[in-house]
Each structure stands twice: as C-alpha cells, then as structure tokens.
Amino acid sequence: MVPGRFLYRRLVRRGAALDLETLSGDLRDDIHHLDSVLGDLIGGEGAPLEIHPDRFLAPGVPRIRPLLVLLSARAVQRELVLSDQNGGEELAVAAEMLHWAIALHDAALGRQGGRRRRAARRLVGGAVGWLGGNHLTLRALELTRQAEGSEALGELLEALREVSEGHVLTQTLQGRTATTSEAMAHAENHTGVVFSFACRVGAQLARAERPVVTGLGRYGRQAGIAWHLAEDISILEQEGDELIFALEDRAAYGHPMLAICLAAERDPRVGELWIRLSQQEDAQVTLELAERVRAVGGLADGRRRLVEASWSARKALHALPASPYRDALDRIAVALAR
Image 1 (cartoon, rainbow, N blue to C red):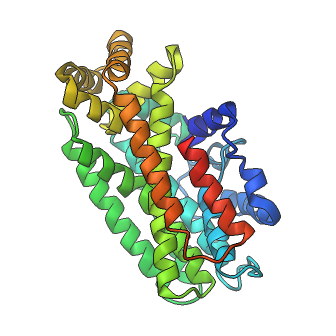
Image 2: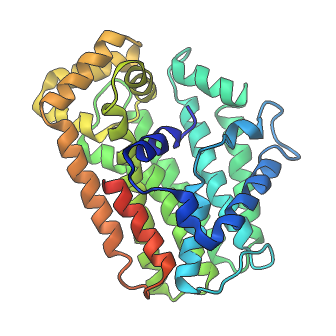
C-alpha cells in the first residue's frame, strides 16, 4: 500500500475537507509541476534499476510535504515565488524524498517473507532498504545543499538524526508491545520529523525570523503526529480484508499503534495478540485484536490524543499574520482531528 493513500481515501470518504487541490489554491500549478520533477529525480541517473517513479507517484496520493513547504513559505511572505533560483523547488522535493526514504527503510524492517516486504518489492523491485532508501536520502541531501543559505542542510541532517533514533526504537520493539510513550515517540520520529522539516525550511526560504521558524516547526511536528495517529486510527475503523491487510502490515515490522498500546494497558490479552500477529499473519488474531482494542476504549483514547495533537498544531500558528496560507495550514490540522 502506498503510504498516505489509505488515510487520504478515508478522509475524503468522510468528507473531512482535506482536499489538497482546494488547499493548494494558487500553488496548485507549482504542486503539479513538482510531480514531474519528483519523477525525474526518483528514477534519474544513479537510481537503482528496480525503482519505478510511476509507482511512487501514484495518482490520488497527496503530496502533503511539498505543500507544507510552500504554504509555510507563503504564510511568511505572501508574494514568494517558487523557483529553482531561490531553492524553493529543491526544498519542496527534498521533503518528499525524505518521506520516501523513511518508507523504504521501514519496508526493510518487515518480517522476512512477510506481506510488508512482498508489498515493498512490488513497489520498488529489489531496491528496498539500504539501496533504495539511501538513494532517496542522497537525493534529498543534494537538493537541500543546492538551496540558498546553510540552514536547510542543517535542518535535513537534524531530521535524519531523529529519524535514525526512530528506527533504533522500532528495532527494540520486536517481540513486545510498545508503551504509549514509545508509540508517541515513533509518531514524532517518523511523520512528525518530516512535517516539521517541511515547515521549517519553508519558513527559512521566506527569511522568517527565528521565532516564526520555531513556531512553524512546532506546527509541523504536531500536525505530523496527528497525521500519523489519524492513519493508524483509520485502519482500526475498518472491517474485513482492509482491516486485516493494514493491521498485519503494521504488526509485521513492529509499527507501534497508539490505540493498541493504550488498550494493552487495560487488557493484557491485547498485547499478547499483537505479539502473535507480529510473528505470523493470522486473520482471526487480527480480528480479535481489533475487537478488543475497540471494546476497552483504546480507539476512543487514541482519538483524544489525535485531537490534542491537532489542537497543539493550531496553537503554534498564532504567531503568524492572518492570510489564506495560514488558514490552509489550520484547515489541515482541523481536518485530521475530525
């Protein structure tokens, strides 16, 4: 499953107003242009032969990270024009590259022979893990280095450090159920880090003062956590094959889901089922796990944590002047909470 597609489909189905085409506004042409740039860079010179750009850029999957770069820049400087001269194009693409690098490294952590690895190989052939992920990481570094000033490269290196810490945490979770604090750290060190990077470099592109850069970075981190939690919750709201496939996918490489961690604190059987599922795919175990999580209130508690992250993201925007771009950032956070 392409990362982000599941959540996006669920949000659209709910009518949650997360229409990125609408939110893009006058940035729509820039976002569409970036798709072709991304395709060229993902499959360009030096790429592993198995990487197919069209599988990364599947229709209907929102490019939320480049949009965050552009919205953050315009929220600071409304007349800013995206171009390769000022580095805006490079930074927007680098944010998406960082996201895909993390996704490929995550795929490599999947259970040997498990569904996650099989799905990853369908996406990029044999280029999972080190080869595919590091190709995209290097592309992101090259792009960020080309942008004006030295701040963006430092931001990317800091983001990569946090992501590495997140992968170390994921590896320690094999064979056990994560605590709620570990589940929140996972959300922050994956999606939160990438969203924060996108917002901070967008603000720096517009020459924002440090407090504004910090505020937009805080918005991105909390919005990223909310996005991460919303995707996990949307999985647990499903039934049948969609639920089984997605939940087994999470368990295969130890992706800690906050709602399950919260439920396991109340019902030890939830933790036992999660460990069994992480070791072997089993539809009956998956269905019982989801039923118990809902029954003991794990899903409801997870939604409350999601709303808290969304509210924290919205508060971080208060320092910005009123503009359509600040409003668009706010609507993203609101839509996730719904």
